[in-house]
Length: 372
Length: 88
Image 1: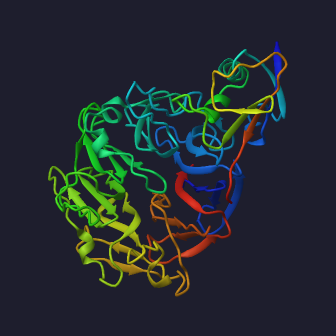
Image 2: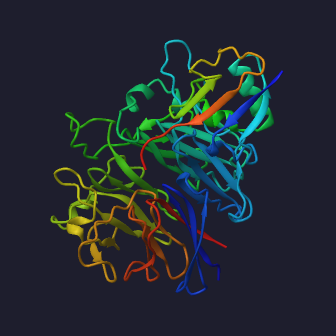
């Protein structure tokens, strides 16, 4: 059986937790890149020895590192994601952070996508060494409206880049704040896909864009099924429909349906997990009432069940960011999340029970499972 | 004529740990280009794709700070590449 390694990107460097065969013991490696801000670490499913890492430091500009030996050694991309030079009169966009990495289609080895802040979409066709802006999105005539350069604390974040496993030209992406967008021609043209999604912070309840998707996932075996954890609720969309259904309405009212991450079961499109956070008043974004819990649906969001066995019963003010929850794909599915308080929590029974497998790490920005 | 470039610690992963290196150029732009030839990737960490010096990088030619890549560099004039950031 393949063993699981959890790659942990933090505000202060990268760490790895390696499991034994039964995932009972975890050994911590690292830090690597101590002091660097790590936004995403992703294994290449087409070439499992390869990993890409999106990084920067407080001082230095953003870049991408690549490892071809399971994360032992890393080399910097000679040509990291960057916008094209601005023409006269245009805003001079510069990548501040490479925020998201997505491997390309299985038929396109070496292809990767990256999302940035301020919002930008980039593509590599050589395994992540050199990157080019995707003009069809970054220079789309509607781009200034879709991503007007809002001065949110981290800027507009482009994330959740999804490649349809049936069709490499069918892409989705999300911008927080901006909305979900779809392309059916490999990124040449894009259209908003936000019907049915609330945007309580906008004056127009039927706005076509300007929404705040926090995380969007596509089921690998049923790619017409999308789940979205939004700033304003949890949604499901079954294509070719275009109207999202707010499945978070079925969450307990005292918990609400606000959160950052959402994870779907790799073999069951009806199963998904969320980690609700407090989105009331001043938006603390911590676990509701200081009692962290995962909520699970087995029926596409018709009903939800609380899963908190092993999690702290009180006084645990966790925040779990959008890239910091994942599964490991193992037959007995492992689920994991990392907190901004530097803890990693694991479940090896698909969310039924949880235990803490790492503490006292720096603020966790991302968590991803690699199988070797 | 090569001048001495003093390199702040976050950038020394490019200079193989060296705190000062040599590079050539009559302007800051030319000097950074030469530096990038010798230490690939170092320039983009300091200067963005719109040719602006990044927010937390300060560059001194001699004792004068400059934000202009066209800044002239006199022979043997030292250049300091400084990383400046507040917060934890």
